[in-house]
Structure formats: structure tokens, C-alpha cells
Picture 1 (cartoon, rainbow, N blue to C red):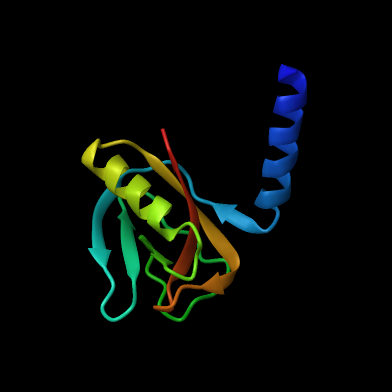
Picture 2: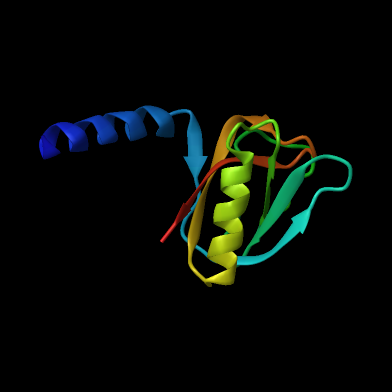
Length: 112
């Protein structure tokens, strides 16, 4: 049963990674809120945020999540938790979409 679960998980992750770009592990320097839209900016500490979609307002350490993602509230909670606990994160960036604010769009957050 464990082998089936492991295989299924790896299969799911390998399919997902083909369409998105995953950053390296780093901490979040700070978070900011959006101006007129429901969004959150993550400023990463020690690595550059990937920008595979070639967004208009890319900043080497800033990535953004907005409420066009169904999991926005979950990503916000995870990012806040990681920042408060001083844990490292890795962000998954959309390969084809920019956020509402024209920044690299976060589609998932990993914490370790």
C-alpha cells in the first residue's frame, strides 16, 4: 500500500512540475498586502523568484499570490505561519500566468 501511495504521489508531482517552476528553499523577508485586489506579496530572503511567464513587473525577490487561485487563503496562511515560525519556504510559480498585479504568480507554497 505504501508503494502505491508513493508512486501515486510521485506521478502527481512529476506532472505538476512540468507546468510550473519551483524556487529553491529560502525564508520570507516580509509580506505585503495588495492595494485594490485581494493579494499577498512575498519577498524572499536569499534567492531570486523565478519568472517563467515574463511578467511586466518582475522583481528578483518578489512573488505574488492573488484570489484568482482557489487555494489563496491556504497559501496566505502557510506563508504567514512560515514567516512567524522563521521556517524556510519554496514557492511554486506559474509558468504561463502573471498575478493580477503583474508579478510572478505563486500557485503553491511548501514549508520545511
